[in-house]
Image (tube, rainbow, N blue to C red; front, side, top):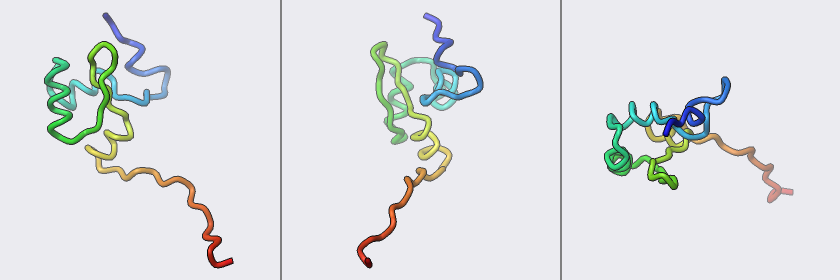
Length: 81
């Protein structure tokens, strides 16, 4: 089954890594080996209904690229008022 919809929609990257990116990251086209590689390297993932691992792009950025998590807007400190 081809999964072109999982690659890129228009110019905007999906929230999860594409199958091509997952192959490059894990070095294997096999689902079991991909899952094992992700687990061994501490990269958070979920498994979809078809048994394919899905890695959230922000988790990938944090774990592999070292990009820190975006901080949500900080609220003012009202304790001094």
